[in-house]
Image 1: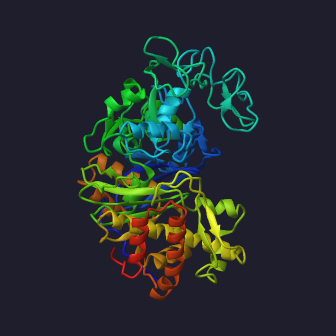
Image 2 (image 1 turned 30 degrees about the vertical axis):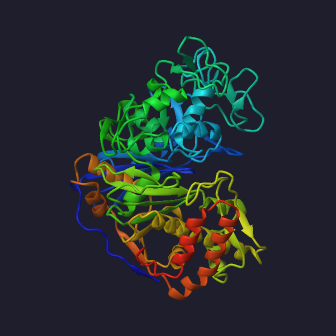
Image 3 (image 1 turned 135 degrees about the horizontal axis):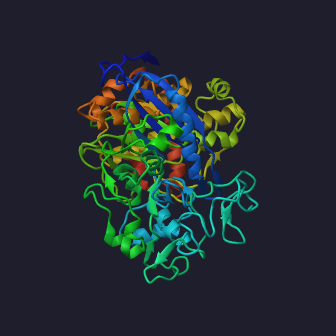
Length: 581
């Protein structure tokens, strides 16, 4: 059951002030212009598309910038009298690329769930770094090996380039996926050039983009040889490309996006010694600052493209999961935010890191030094489109109410491999049983996400994370009232739903904090976040979902993915009142 919550009170900043939050998601870029009390003055959305082939998932980084320009102009339309006090950018966690000093891409963007760098991840783990296959560091090592020195790659166009004569498409590779053409130049079929003349080059291994320490080309794939970057080339996270383009010059990355590239948040330093062993050039790495630090101002060229006023402060951001956590207001110890979009991300607040030897749970660091533990599952709403590409979600939600619980058990992974609540690179989506109808299958998918969410919370409890604070639902799926109530029933605990569930609002709050308009990030968020609804679990419904939840836990354990101690802990908690934990 749901009841309405009170709106946040107070203001941050003057009557004419507002802050801009920019969120780069999987399927779109969203921009919000919000005042200090959370009033949204304007918003804009621009779509993104990617390419998936097996474990590979890429996007064209040039599309990110174009989408930011489009969405920013829409958010600011008709708001010329509003003073933009600052902006911050969040992006998908673990998405990396190589770019030049002006923010122009030199490689594709390898997305957060791209799994091509499994061998590089194994090398990093052997060297003592606790990383998952899809994290930023393994993909950085892959990029260094694949795009290396010679032939003008990783530099400005002129002698083999991305960029084209005219604006035509690069050489076709037949399947629409970036791949090596006959001359070594990457291209894609039929949908235009990846970048423009002068934006840099993308050339496969063999033509080179990074120079060896001795001046020759890097040895073959997997050599781990020592290399140095061509002048101006740098490793970047998705948000870094946008902040660099906004500022017009290289800017530091933030420690939140750098976490999955193996930045040590406790020592606040890159592990340079280990990186040298792995062959990752020191000169390729950006400087790092804490989120909320001022890193630049919007330059004239970016202002012309985006409509953001010249001189607007650019504040170091955080990952999209952390941004959603800020937008939920879950910043006090024991509070948790569950972000349900394409995938599922849980983030909480703690005074110390939550230790996990498997690396499934990791810890971001808040601007003031406290910790934000959590994890990211590959289960999420993205799986729904795979089963129902032309669905009407509202109609299917209505029909699903007759199937509580569903007759089948589903584990709805949006992409291959699982990252949280257990680590299983070979995990695949499954449905146990034959659904009676489309409505039954839809219900099983929605419930499967809820069961996974419960297992994530049980895993965090198993690891000793503080769990006694409120739970908040954010993300695109939080727009579904039915799914929100279903999740609260499955979890057996209350959940809050804010008025604004978008990570972009979290970045607006971080921008307000970073420009001095609020004394703490928690204070900025408390003033901006308004609770729309508080969902109360229905005990009878919670009891109905206990048996299918236990069946899913058993199936995951049987397949060898879920460790037995965690499975036993989850089953034991079925007999307990989890409303406050």
